[in-house]
Amino acid sequence: IVASAEAASEPVGLVDFLYEVTHLTPCAEDSARAVARVFALGQDNFAPITSTEFGYAGILTLFDRARLDRLETIAPSDDGKSMGRFFARRGPSLYMCFTEAADTAAVRARLIEHAPNDWTGPREVEQPDVLFIHPKALGGTMIGVSRKTFAWTWSGQPERVEEARST
Image (tube, rainbow, N blue to C red; front, top):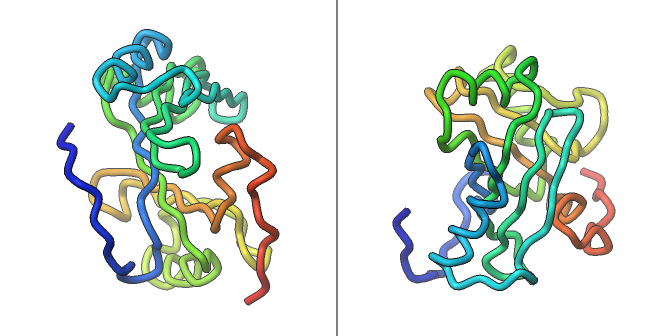
């Protein structure tokens, strides 16, 4: 990991910022302890996370509880789902990242135009909560795109989620 000083910058394009990197590991608790040690984080920076839909359990290690910036450490639990298959092939590794966008409908429109078969997410809702851009469209990594504040849904502070705005 390379850590550099925080610096303000203007967003370029449709994505506002990258807030998460997902690390796959056989034991999320051990990995979270290592992250806490390296970055001097307390237990109050941790938010447990599980998903039967995607087949995993893990821990969000937030660098600052007031912000989404974090390293997600995940132990895949279902070899039939994409994360489990990836982990079975590659072992412990970085898997994906997540970004936030104020206008996920515009991101979706760009995906429909440039990578119509290489993403997943709702096609009919006005402002999608979450989209996934597949590695094929990006040349090697998967990127999740969540609408503004929506990631707080699974980040331990769901009361911070704002209503979706109309376009």
